[in-house]
Image 1: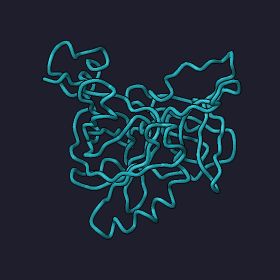
Image 2: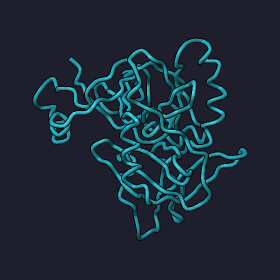
Image 3: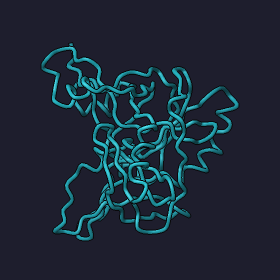
Image 4: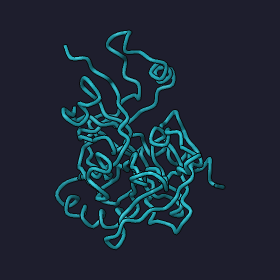
Length: 259
């Protein structure tokens, strides 16, 4: 029997398509993409003395006033090299040119794998946060991000998916040796997440899951189910991806409204 690793954070970048209700919705997706793509960014770090100076870690998206960016907490877990002036940064493409803005980590919600950053430069087009409590199993959505990081460049990728299940964040382990501290904590304080029938890759962490009819964000991609080793996330993907409902994003934003 293959050894199964229940969860694997997918930090780096991606872009994926998902319809939300019939052919009419699919025809509306190109219009929605044109509106929200400018607010979807690659999250990474910038170091002036490094080659390359910019390194991608995941995906994020602008919210609120356009100067706030949401991503996963595990994307920003890297300890920065202050001695070499390493900083968090957001990367995006505008007018066919690659752009970068320095970012600051403002707050994290480790329990729901969320992080809030702020950017120092001009504001980005913000995505609207929708009502994740109205999401139902069987509905179709899309997510957009930067899979496999710098390999594919600053070209967001979109995938379509249905909500395959709404299930607890902590799924019981098959064997006791698969239990760890984080899993035990999730079992004690579970919350529901969206299970998608879509393939996400390293780099998709932080990608917005959105309604393809309105563009409103209902969740954020944060992990995939991996069969065997972590390398299988690319070579043999399971096709099972998880997203944190957007209600937790709203809570984080409300708690840090003054920042």
